[in-house]
Image (cartoon, rainbow, N blue to C red; front, side, top):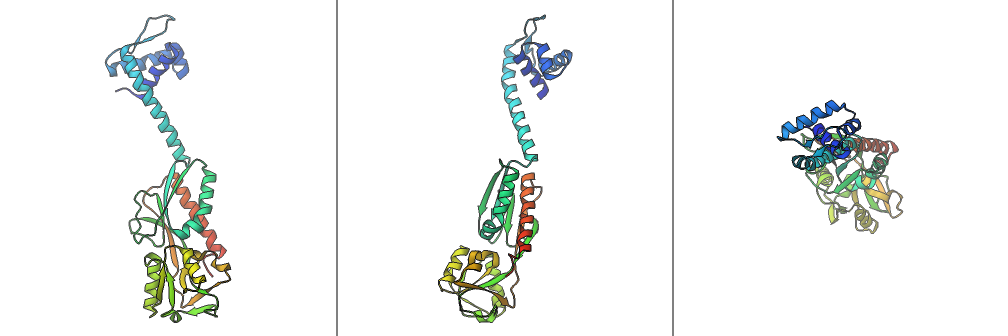
Length: 296
């Protein structure tokens, strides 16, 4: 069977016109080049060049033209593969990432900016979904507010304190007893993932708020609190600009609810680009935690 080096020899001779010039171009001796063409001819079952001898150029045969057409396609494909592989190892290529609102709004912007600074030609694809059961189908990495299935690889990024978001003057104390929320009009996210856990924890404490509106939009929750429709229990990072909103107040709960834990999930070996995004995410989460953004 012929090899790529045999096809490269064929292409060089066809391009340069003589065995001597082709050997110089490839850095071979002329006898080595002749041996490679002989091996190619044995593999394809006939001569690929007529050799008139002397300074006259080698003439490609009809069989040689057939082989040359495919040889150039294969050589181009091999070159493209080599470039893509080199780009992959250098951190290029594409990375597909599953995310959710808080991560999209708070954690990912500096991560994406740093990754694009390191690799300007990289292809970053983000998919935002609120789901009870994370799946990595079609994804390299996924941010999720839980550790995911046991067969997944994971890193815990941060713990995000749950706080009460209330209309101004509804509660005076900086800490609000959880039992004061029993029967209170409440605005909430869909009852999955962290929201489901919060409601289960309140129920375990004998507290059953009266939900008057649910939305998948964190900011819509805060907007309805601002409008006086009710209050909400949210992870602090999901409250957006509520910390500086003079129409709402943020309160710690007594007793405190367990924080929302944000994980980054993957499975098996990561590409260098995906591994870089993972490392940048860990660093960004560390910065958020040290800045106090995750605690009131």
